[in-house]
Image (cartoon, rainbow, N blue to C red; front, side, top):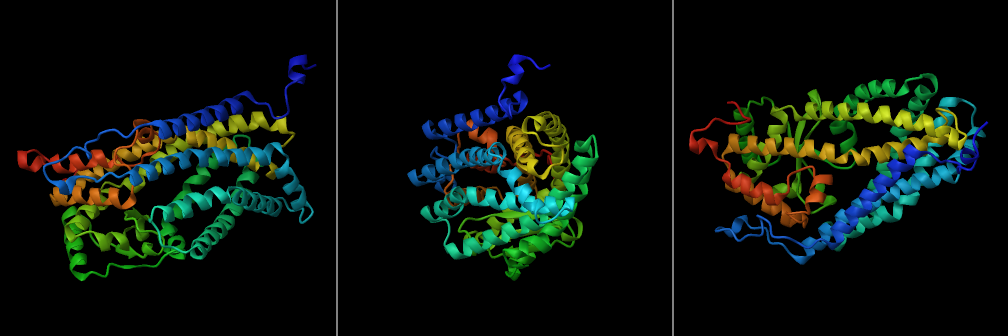
Length: 432
């Protein structure tokens, strides 16, 4: 017979889940306070250099925008967790599953319908914050000219893709959870081919839904990039430009895809605002990712972390289900699964951020070693900081928790000072 204390525990009570949730909310609260009250500090980028080309002009607008973005990151995280908790504790997810049961008795289709309803409700409940974060703020700081209608169309496309993929994969996951005792291991193994599949198709199937990709149009720059790629040891480089100016005024470039779809992509905004040497320096960084197999290493690192995440998700999920009178694999338990995964994922964010900063720094080293374009790279960093209106020297806690790249205040002096070839020293990462 259960003790008097256990009989009085509220429904849904679960010490591990409660502690994790409280820890995540505490981190978010501390981060918001730190972000709001911290005063701007002098950084390497703020010190007056001899050459003003390498100085980031820090404005009140830049600081304010950075504070808003950082606060929104943590507030959005807490809000999303709150939405999932609401669906779980209110019994809303159970009612959605019951409605789906009136439509079909087939378990897989039942799960798909329930997941679709849950995703739609989550989207609606998160919409106000999403509109403010992704539409109002960029327009408030003159970082986008995209109309609200166009922004909504992109959002509907993203939701449609999410529903198509999420309902099928979610229903398959629930099937595995119902049938397999150690489902965390099977789901982890199942995630490997799924991640690889989407990494392959993203550049040619998913990304073109939102933007137009085409080979680089600047003939002279294309030849310089081909020459740089050849020097870096890359043959048959695929370099594309994308019309991101329809959505943003900021600049970026990236590497994505695997095998036959691997490519380097430059936003048209970057091509409009940077000189050829600055573009070459930025592309040297992206080529570094390619040559050093950072895409594959990043996938391996992510899978290693997710191995432990999946394990702990099952431990907490299985212990928590009875508190909500739910069975394993019940579609109504989707909010619980997502909540546990969200909390754990949030708490391990610094691990991924630290790894990402390391490989981004090595890509900077590669770019400097292969191009020797120290000053153009430093100027490119200045332009990126000013163009995006982000603080080049964030609070150390913010950098630790969520920065995937070293802050600009650190990248500029490194770009100017890293010259091993002038000292007769060997390269650290690029081996000609």
